Every structure is written in structure tokens, then in C-alpha cells.
Image (tube, rainbow, N blue to C red; front, side, top):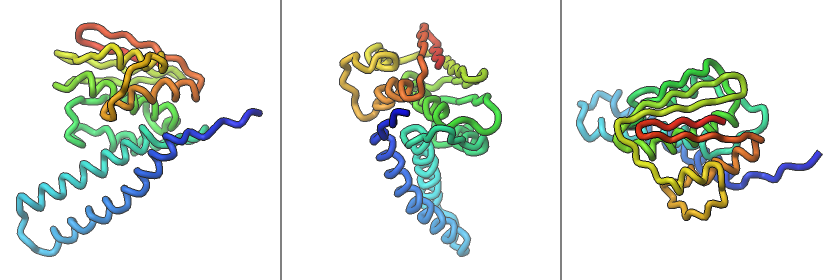
Length: 199
């Protein structure tokens, strides 16, 4: 049995997210205590509370998308739902997550990385649907207007495409190596107003 080398990128992602979740939670608890202390509500306090809640959700999302996913590890359906619920994190893209119950963390990691690709392609908003049929996953998104960078989308199936990836689009570069680790292949179809990805 060959030893699979550690995914250092994912381990770094897990470490950073783990170390940030605790202080964010502490700040959130402090804000709640201030709100319960009888002080009158203020726009400033509401803004702080909303910002902390959004940052906490984003860090938890990143922990799944960029963190390590061990073989056989599962993620609770309730956790997925809380991370993708409408209106959270100021997300412009609405996500309809159809797989019910707990899901394999590796597959969810891929789905979350791909959801960020859809968000990049839909800066003006859109609707995305995630489906699962056995081991086969499909993510389909529709929007009135798409912003497609062909070089970035080429990285999903060809990590050697040679495109320099800016930090804000690093998710495009992480998908092909993760697919290889999981022994999966990807199919991408891009039309004028829709994107469909299967893995």
C-alpha cells in the first residue's frame, strides 16, 4: 500500500481556519453579552454583530473548502445547510443544496471549491443547484449574465494550463489536484447563461 503524501495546502488551510474560529467566536460572545447588558441597541453594535456573524460563516465555509478532508470523513447535513442558508455571508448567489443528510467531506470539499468558481462567474447574482446521484455529483448554475475567464475554467481539468492565478481565484487552481487525489474526473459545460459541472 503506497503512502499518500500529505496535502500541505489543505493542512495550512485547516490550521488557519481552526485558529481563527475560536477568537471570532469569543468576539461574537462578547457582542452578545453587551447586547444583553441592557445597553440600547445602536447601528454600530448591529454592524459589528453582523460582521462577526458573516466572518464566522465565511471561515467555516473556508475550513470545508480549503481544509483537509480525510478518507471516510463525513460532514453533517445540518452543518452544510447552515453554511449555505439564504442570506448568509452577503452571498449574491443562491444555492439549492439537494443531497440530504450527512455527506462525504471530500466530495463536499470539491463542491464548495466549485461553488466559489460559480460565485466568481456570477458577480451580479444567480442560482446554483447541487445534486448527487450515488457517487456522481452535478452542480448547475444559471444567471442573466455570466463573467467567464476561459483560462481559469481550463484549470479545472488541466492544472498545467499555465495560467497565473490571483489569490482571489485560487479555488480554480485547487480543484484539479483534489480531483486527482480522489480519483475523480470532471466535466464542464459553459453556455451563454448557464454552467454545468459534473464530477
